[in-house]
Image: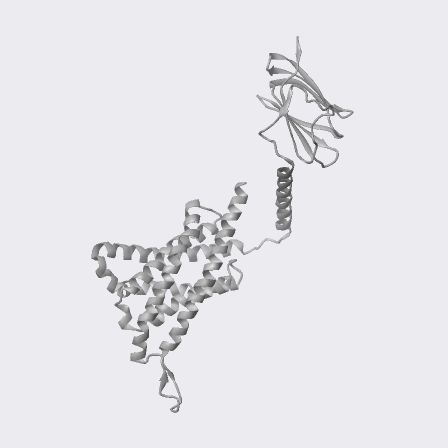
Length: 359
């Protein structure tokens, strides 16, 4: 029986040499390293049909004598460990490459890419090691259950608002703008009062988001809802109520289901993209609609003197609440800037981490 040389493909990392021998249905494998030379002999189907194939390779630098290999129906995969973690300029001691040897481009990396791969492995090992040392929270399941139910209730509430307003818009058209408050207010009151727990949750460490951004959003919305719309009957019939409520509901019907799925360690890519993208035009539009509502309420507060601050007689009768609202307008746009920066950072971190996982 003729003895032949199989096709051999190689690649390396800083600590290992990988060899792929093109020999299917290999039998009687004899693979060993002696005096820094790899000897291979096996019976199988190669480039010249069913024959006995063999080869020897003298490595450029010392390797460990232990060899691991795995035989599949199509090939034999061999791993040889280097004595020292370093990068070789070539595989063999002889400068001229053997004719049967070629690079394995399926596994080939240059030195810098191999270093990045090694660092990624080390970071993953360190992360697992750190996480293993952190004691498990015995109440984790209870916390996730509570957060899931909270987000579910809010999702259902804002979905009801969105669907109700959308149906009324198609049926009544612009007439639906002027009675939105009387139709939607009770559910919006419920959702926004419940949203106070979004400030409590980060304060108690139940979620990782900051307290300040949540406080800005919850306080800002509740001022608009309870002080501007709830206190002034003249504001309740204005079209701005429709736009404020509609923009709030669109944002939340994507935000809350995203948090629901996160509680059960599940991700829907389209929902993730919508949650971190749709707010970019809608959030500033919502703040703009809120600002319009505040501006429209200023003459009403001046006329009714509602919430005015009493002053000594020497200074006048009272200080109109409209001055407070004018200051609030400035703070509203400052809050928009702070929250927008915070949400942009969240979006960058989210998609950067997804890219790292994909790589």
